[in-house]
Image (cartoon, rainbow, N blue to C red; front, side, top):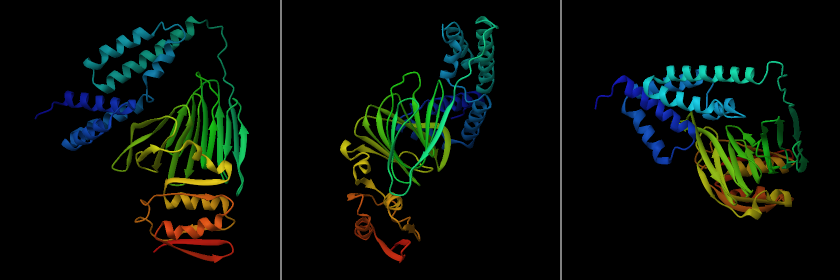
Length: 346
């Protein structure tokens, strides 16, 4: 079937908007991959749509709504212009025109509020926290949220009058987020982030594996949608409720979603290390948080990485956990010295 250039552009733009919205179903994503495979021209047009979107600052509808606040004077005008531009202009031109509308509306809004008004300067609050080997710590943040850090964990915090952000660069945390509908909280671990208003959940960043589990409330988990190992501008989104968990690895889509006993979430706070479908890398990451010896993975684990185990251990009895590894995974343990333990595939 012949597809003209304008139709192909329209298809590319519609696919880009659907994937960017986070509402694409699994079937939508499969159909998108099939559409890309139908012709190299499809991929070219999709890349152009991405480039055009990026060139105008990744404009989202929520960005346009900001212009209309507080009295909504410009919202209907933007809606109308968006409606008429899409069918008559190709995507890059439409986006350029829409960007111009946003700029003009924002300027007019500022002038109409009185030039004499002083611009609002948001107060920015930042902090960084970490824990040491075998140490856990509870903290109260600027907004009243309570964070408990697992051993050898690191976070940085940034809050202003519109956003609350926490960056978990290493380790694990359990957070009871203070409710604030005007400032949803986002917690980032590598390319994954969880967004909440007021809830409690655990996030673990174990190097290559990120795990999120909900204690109370609801959590929206997002990360870039990967196609053939490459991140696209589309967002893969999962919505979690109490007892739900997800697991994802670097540079892949969210692979696992399931249910877990709420009492086992963040069990390290109570002296237990509980695992539900955990990989050997997650076990080794925890061993390095609590063992006085460095636990090193040596060799090719590609045939072992997909093996998962459910188990629990006493946090104070790390030696038992080390000795149990060969019974859970096809590995060999070597204690090289008083300072090092090597784990190798059989």
